[in-house]
Image (spheres, one colour):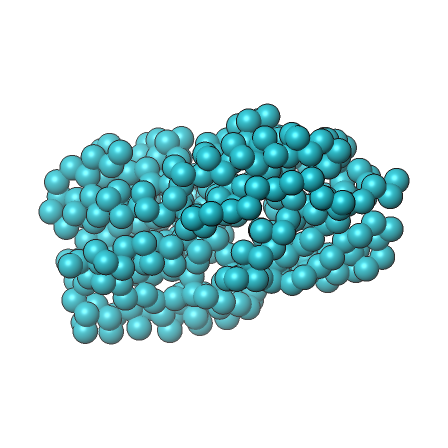
Amino acid sequence: MLTVLMIGPGADSKGGMWAVATTIMEAMRDTCRFVFVGTTTSSHLRVAKLAAATRAYWQFVACLLADRPDVVHVHFAAHGSPLRKVPFVATARLFRVPVVLQAHCQGGFPYLAENASPLVLRLLRRSFRGASVFLALTEAEARAYREWLGLEASRVAVVPNVTSRPSKIEVRRATAQVAFLFLGALEDRKGVMECIAAFELAFVDGFPARLIIAGDGPLKIRVEAKASESPCRIDYVGFVSGDEKNQLLRRASVLVLPSYKENFPVVLLEAMAYGLPIVACPVDGVVDILEDQVNGLFCDAGDVTSLATAMRTLATNPDLRLRLGLAARQDSERFDSSTLPPRLLQVYSHAVTGQSHAVE
């Protein structure tokens, strides 16, 4: 059994990357032994993030010495996350432990390139080229990173995010009130304020609809204020996880994710697994998950009117909601966590032996 030392966000990060890490460890617990080191803090202060990463680094070194891992699996996202992972990659190589590097950057490589200085990009390129295998979530992202890093195809694999699907769900029937659910970080790129504005535009006439907002982030105070003063029914329920999140997914009628930038959002996979029709913007990895009019409806990013139209269309058409939801549930099979172990085991084996991973 392989021992994998995993580096990523801690449970307090409240994000999709933590969900991915925990799904990997749960899905592969019978085939790998995982040792996890969390590098994040709930604080948004840079100094706090740096302090958390420093503590995590020394814990990481201790694990390298004590656990003698076969592979180090490093997760990184956007902003300062890639830079904070450089010491981990360098130290793993110093200990001659192969590194699997997994990208979760919203907006993919273009976003990373646009928001880092040339000096930082050179440092990241030098560090990331040392990974035995680089994991991307989509084919487009894999091509971009392969070209930037100058890696041969055998060292870049596409392993999309997955989720644990409930074995059975209730068929969603027409209800007296249509419940829209926003589930995610309360920040500008997620379009949460546009979601509120669109909901008010679509249902100011008193149509029986409800918007549930679940999440945490820098826009929390604005969201709470807007929800309390809105003429429509908008309920902010705070950050949710586990059974509480699953209950929301069971009770909701539609998931809304009007993001400006995404990568391969886990929340879409979770909503599909529960048979929810989805309203989303066709940005980045979203188009690898959803197809307009098949398992969801697309709207233009930042366009409140377009979003309101899509929400009103689903609210007033229960047959369309049912059709899209059933299609989403069926399509979610390709993102079930049971598909992950053989793929990732091939990746880990390639990292350890240097043989072609041939991930399919």
